[in-house]
Figure 1: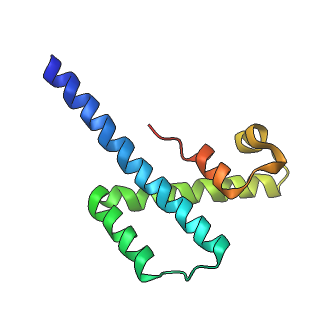
Figure 2: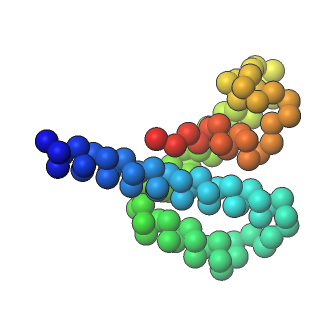
Length: 106
């Protein structure tokens, strides 16, 4: 039983670490956009490749899912609907705080 619990906890830690790496990469891309850093730089592509190597296709899917959620939030805002993001963060929300709210770690 102890071994099974240890395995569950280890798996949770691995999934959380993977999710953290993806969220950190997304936040870095936002910062790079804000700071005018070259898009698709060798460094950014190398980091993306490392994450995909570490996490596998799930990384690509999760990043795409995050982007889809952001589009839905934008559409709702443009149509005048409130969302959990607008309720929780208000008008002072910035891209980083939205990512932190949308990308909740396990």
